[in-house]
Each structure stands twice: as C-alpha cells, then as structure tokens.
Image 1 (cartoon, rainbow, N blue to C red):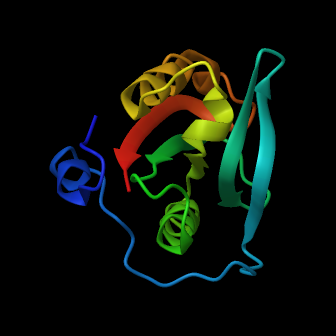
Image 2 (spheres, rainbow, N blue to C red):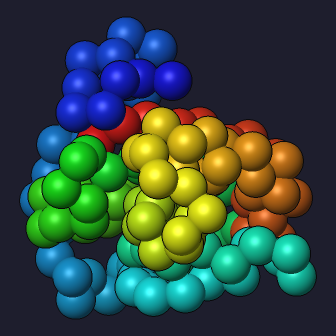
Image 3 (cartoon, rainbow, N blue to C red):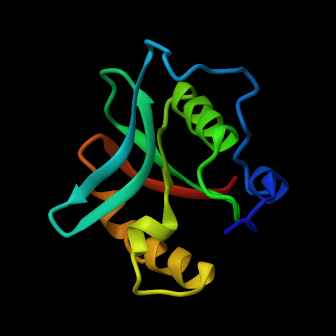
Length: 132
C-alpha cells in the first residue's frame, strides 16, 4: 500500500491519477457522502463516486491523509470514478469508531474488509488501495 500523502507510491504501482478537474455536480457520476453498507456486516462512512449506470468496475479505495476527507480527496475520488472505477474514500475515524486509537489501526481495520469489497455488486472482484 502506498504511504499516506504520497501519490508517487500509487503511480509506482501503476495507478495513474486522472488529470481532469471534476465537479461535485457532475451528471456522469453517482456521488454520495455519508454511511454506505458494503454488505450486511460492514458500514463505511465516507465519500463515494461511480460512473452512472455502470457495473463490472474496479473498486478503488482512496485512503485520506491525516486531515481526513477534504475537497482535494473528494476531487481525487471523482476523477477516479470518471476513469471508470467505483471510488471510495473512507472516513477512517467514523468507520472505526472508538475501537482504535491510532490511524494505522484504523487503516488496518478497513483493509481487513477488502474481501467484502471484492464482492461488491457493482464491482468486478478487483480492489485497489491508494493514498491521497
């Protein structure tokens, strides 16, 4: 997994960041911020975007930096959605709740649920994780 705050690590493993600007009202995307059920066992708080009407996508998880989900993270999620991915930026603190005190533990907890994301109804079984 790429180190938080480093897109260089993501590029090094073959995940390029789409260069175009996006809008939170882009009609080509379904965009949602709040709680989202991955399945009946895991609820994720975060920011989500996907191309409208598309299935069979890679699921791309964008791990936010120390500052959490800000406008730059939202834009990154939307750009990856425009590139054809179901993109998710989890709010690590809200998703983990009070169970974990360190950021690393929150990330590890989220990563433990990757097998659930592989079974996402709109996904193709591929899950990639990058840092914002």
